[in-house]
Image (cartoon, rainbow, N blue to C red; front, top):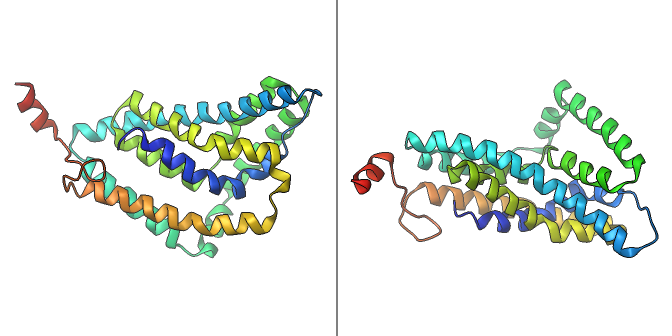
Length: 233
């Protein structure tokens, strides 16, 4: 996966964030009378999310490097694309049952407790911490980003890919945190209708990449470990 695509995935996925994480961004505390101070706090919050994404990218990029050693990049890319499509096509009732599991509910309850403590502090450090916490929340489009990090097949590349993913979400999420209250439910509903289309488009890209068609950027040729060894010689 080309590393720069992390920014594109994040930018497209950020519209999904309006519905999912928008309420959190809107609820961020305001302290100080300076508009510059308020803006700085929102920047810290979004940088915190980018840090979380980078950490996840590093971990899953390392996992991807193990996959690359065994020459399974093509299979992984196709599998990830298929999983995304299955997720999108899964009925909401089934998704709700999955999210209603005991582990998931405990995780959300713990998040709410920590979130309420941080939001009451009203400090720059608490806003940065809120961003880090927000970054680890379960999110379909973050999983798409993680899939991209795995396909980079490298620890540093995975971290950089997800850092770009976080920066891609920055414009929309920063805007929501500043003027979010003016975005009504109807607008959020319309935006959310586009999310499945964007997800399937990304899934198709993953599948095409795995098919190894030799199309630059879209479906480049994978190089196996054996081929790399021959070139090195």
